[in-house]
Every structure is written in structure tokens, then in C-alpha cells.
Amino acid sequence: MKYWYAALLCLSFVSLPAQELRVTEGITDNQVLQRSADQTADLHFGGTIIGKKATGKDVEARLTSGGSPVSGFEWMAVGKVNKLQKWTAEIKGVHTGGPYRLEVRLQGSPIIYPVDKIMVGDLWILAGQSNMEGYGDLVDVQQPIPQVHSFDMSDKWLIAEEPLHTLVSAEDRVHWRLNDQKEPERWSGERLDKYITQRKKGAGLGLPFAVEMFRRTGVPIGVIPCAHGGTIMEQWSPTLKDREGDSLYGSMLRRFHAVGGNVKGMLWYQGESDASPAEAPYFLRRFEDFVKAVRADFNEPDLPLYYVQIGRHISNMNIAEWNNIQAMQLKAETDLPNVGMISSIDCTLDDAIHTSTQDLKRLGFRLADRVCRDLFPRVKNYGDLKPGPRPVSAHRDGEVIKVNFSGVNGRLQSDGRIAGFTIHDAKGVPVPLIYKASVDPAEASTVLLYIQGALPAKATIRYGYGKDPYCNVRDAADMAVPAFGPLNIE
Image (cartoon, rainbow, N blue to C red; front, side, top):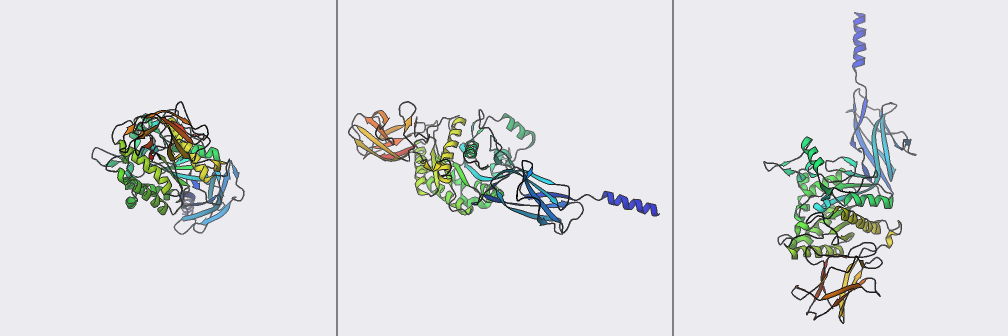
């Protein structure tokens, strides 16, 4: 009897599960945390204990980098296990950089739970429609680097690589495709694998921008893809945010909170789908309302937002509306504080409406210039950069019309003869008068348009008129002249 009891006691002891600590909340592998003004971030995390109870025990954590402990972040008590076998913890003041490895254990335990490749840097939300989602050919794409990560659309942190957006497997229903029953359906398994393997389109400007920002600043970058092709401003309405993952704005806001509720800024590329008689009249108001709402909901009244003016479309429909959208985007830059616009009117396409992969890289660099000028002015004299050419005035001097620009870096220039300017009469009809154009030898920010023939009354200048113009004027920093007009000729 004594031996049976002893054997049972021994068996019971062996069958008890060991204590196992798990991190189940907060920080995850590959996560990038937004740094604060003091160049640090706080790690918030928590978890549970599996197995034998550990109520009252300390949870310890440390940070390592390159296999060595980070000074000031050696093993320390960060929390206690409660009666429900749960715990929460915080490590404050982690410096910009990484990658870091977070190691967590029960006090004195040899069993460590790791969270790898954590970085502290800057987060950027990518939003808009297809040119931000990425429809460039997946050929010669921007290559990934270890210091740029993405919170992919399935809510997983990964090293960022093209394509950044995969809508069919997104966490939020608003991005899913409709099935045969006209219901949104999330793709998975072999269907998703086949789609990913056979995908030919998907390059965007987000990864080139992020890689360029790291190269310039040395600060790790995290991107949060939120764009969706073919969407109008009304579909991004802040009034729909209560629908959460069933609306574009709600999905974006949810993902903002999922990455910590703090970002460096937003990149926006949208407007093509609003170039219609039904939508164009409301575009400027809707866009400006969107920007104001984002800043309110992000609790950041000065949130930087940079956007791309729509470029070309191989189509003869809604020409006036297309040019009106471009004009409103140019106006928004002066209406709103802490925004910046770049032009894409000189870019090549990979199909009838989508910017080419190579020029998406170019747009990423242009955005990096605008961001560095505004937010990193002391890094490599980026503060000396100007925002890029903006039209100021046009006046006639004999048989020459002088078009003056502000914001020019160095000197205006073009590949081959200058193209893209047109003269219009009072009704907006183009009048063929320009036979030559050049940059003024005496003024680097002025274009001279040589005309022959009578200038109509109340004539105006446009640049980038139509939906598929050939435009090639830029400054020494590769900032393109935006589509503009009508500009009165004085």
C-alpha cells in the first residue's frame, strides 16, 4: 500500500506541466515603434502563464542587440503574475534604432520567451487608391532592407517587400473581393498562394520612399499599407469610421491604433476615380475634410501629410474633370498647413492609368525630398531644399510670354525641348501659338514661351492640359512642375 501511494505521488508530480511564460499582447516580432520627441519609445507587452500557477512571481525582461545586452536594459523586474495567471509589463525609454531582441522570463527561470527584430523609428501610413496600393509591374522592384518593416494587411509585422498591399487576405472586410454570392470573402490557402505566385502587378512608391528615408536618416521605418484601388474620396469619408473594418476610414483608423496609436505621418495618392462629373465638384472639400478628420482622430493636429498630384490617363473621357482635380490638389497645398504635394505629370505608365514601377521609385524619392526638407532640415542640409516649382505669374513681353515659378531648386530644365505648355482663349479652347520654349538665361525660375500670332483676349496658360500630355520640365532636384492652370496672362 505504501509503495502504491508513493508511486502515485511520483506520477502526479511528473505529470504536472512546467510553467511556461508567453507574450501574447503588445509587442511582436518585427514591430517598429514610433519614436517620441526624445528619440525613444516605450515597450508595452503582456501575457499569460501556462502550467503550474505562478501567482505573485515577478516577470523579468531585458533587451539585447547583436547578441549582447543593451546597456541600461539588463534583466529587470517589469511586472507580476496575477491570480488569473496573467501579467502586463512596460519598458520605458528604448532608444531609436535596433533591431532589438526582447527576452522575457519568470524570475530565476532558465526558460526565455523571445520577441525578435523590434525597432524604434518612424511609422508612415500609406493610403489612397491604386497608385498607392501599387499597380506597377513586378519587375526590377525596390529590394527590401532589414531596417524597413511593414504592418501587412493581415495585421502581421514583416520585413517590407513588394508588393506591400495584398487586399484579398486583409484583416478587414472592406478590402475583400465579392464571391459568387456577392458577399465579401477573404482568400486563404491554395487560392491565396496561387494568387500571390501568379501576381504580375503590385509595385508601389511606399517601399522606395521608406528605403530612401532610412538611407538618408539612419532611422528605421515602418509602413502601414491601407490603400484600396478604384476608390473615391467619399469612400474614405470619416463619417464611416464607426463601421470599423467595413469602411476604408475605419480600417485605417483601426490599424493606426493597432500599431500603437502614433505615427510620423501619412502618404496619400488618390483622385483619379473622382475625375467624373458626379464626384469632381466635391473633391476639394472632401479631401480637406479628410485631412482635418485624420488629424483629429490621430490626436495630432499638425500631422504631416504628403500627397501626389494625379498624372496621366490614356483616355478621352472627363478631361475637364481630370484637370480640375489636379488644380484642386494644387490649391489644397496652400489651403492646408503641414501638407506637401509632388507632381507625377512627367512620369511613365505601366498601363493606361498606373505609374510605372521605375517612376514610382522616382516619386518615392521626391516624397523623401519633401519630407526631409520639412522634418529633417538639419540632416545633410535638407532644409536648403525647396518644395519644387510652383506657378506664380505669366505676363507678356512683346512676342514672349514669361512664366514665373517659385520653389525652384537650382535651375529649371528639361530632357530635349520644353513641352507641356498651352495657351487658351477666354472659353478655355487651346490656341496654337507657341513655337519655342526655353528657360530664361537670366532667370533660372522663368520659362520663356515664344509665340507667333494674335494673343486672344483674356488668354490663359496651362501646363499639363488634357489627360495624356507630354510634360518634361523639372528643377535640379528632379522636382517636376505640376499640372496647373488656367493662369491669366497679364
